[in-house]
Image (cartoon, rainbow over all chains, first blue to last red; front, side, top):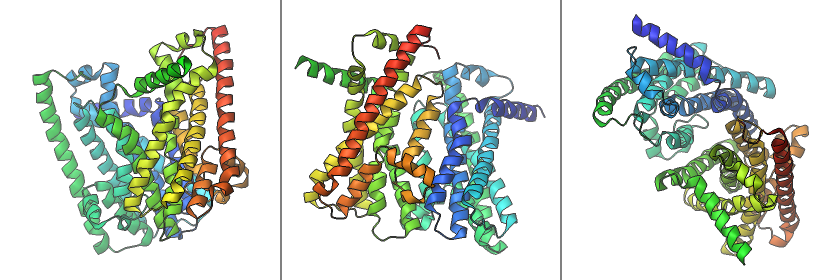
Length: 259
Length: 262
């Protein structure tokens, strides 16, 4: 119960404060609009389904991912910069729960960015938005949000001891757009890369949303739902192990706040 | 000769000041990795959207637009970095003219931007079968040089805007998105609303992208001289605007005593 309180308090605090940062404001408020317009212009003459999948949802998912890159992945780095990393690390509330709360707080904003791009692209382009199955859409969006939280948590763990967090977070944005078929079908990629793409949960989430747009039976969608859930649990498990190892390493090396 | 040496020294120092803190790996990721990934991403979208077998038309646009990385994230942050380092007041108090301050800060980025594009073209030739006859390369390099110059001049204006706001990242990212969307790199400019099209024409790189596509389609350099001259003049105008903005802003800031206020 105490952990849940920490989680909620951390998420609420992060939700209120993260939007104060200009880069985060850009990611969740401005980028969905600009990216939505840019992709809308590009997909203008494609079918309504392609337009819905890539211009409407693609722009939203890409900005959600950007918010993970520029916030969840770099929050640890930011705490280090502020000189508060040691404080939250040593807090009796539990470092893991505080970090998870932060990522949930950021992800709420990330999810809102999908709503912004959906509204803007729909209003500006006046194209027909095709959603054949609202259940798949709901499941896809919920699982994708949970999975991005898990990825953010994993990155937070990985970057706790990394001096390259700032550079890496800038580099991570586009490779995921390319690999996971967020902005175009992964069938455009060479076969080898397509196999690699399935190691990243956004690929599975995009497939579920694709079925929501194009329509599909439970038999068609369920493997992707299952795959996404397994990957998300896998990310969470690795994150928990990483946090345990980092805990030991920080105490041995005493390099938590070293740049 | 002394002034030329001084120019080179200032250009080198300013460039080093921006990147010296990074390891080679970080430098390559920032300077080549991110721009190339963006180029690949948008070219692949274009291949899917426009469905053309020869994707070179869109690839060239996305390769040229890479110069904005240096223009915006290199040149655009220069004055804010001076402010952050506490050296802006020294710069303003120095006897250097506006051009003397700006030119060295843009100089190496012009060549760096050019290198990024050339590297992108090599990658493109491997992935998208981009091919430009050797006879067209001198003209293409000239277009790249002019494109890079006008992009850097735009970066200088962004750099001045950085002095007005604490939200520099917001300005930088909006400017970079504008370069992606308004220059015709990714979709035909006539798809934009009528009121937005003149802004597209006023953006740096729009003419260079048009010129390089025409060159690829077989046009001669002499046919493109008007467009290139237009891009070069645009660069000069943008640089002049940057110098005037810097002069006015620093004068007002000194008068109000807010030069280094955040």
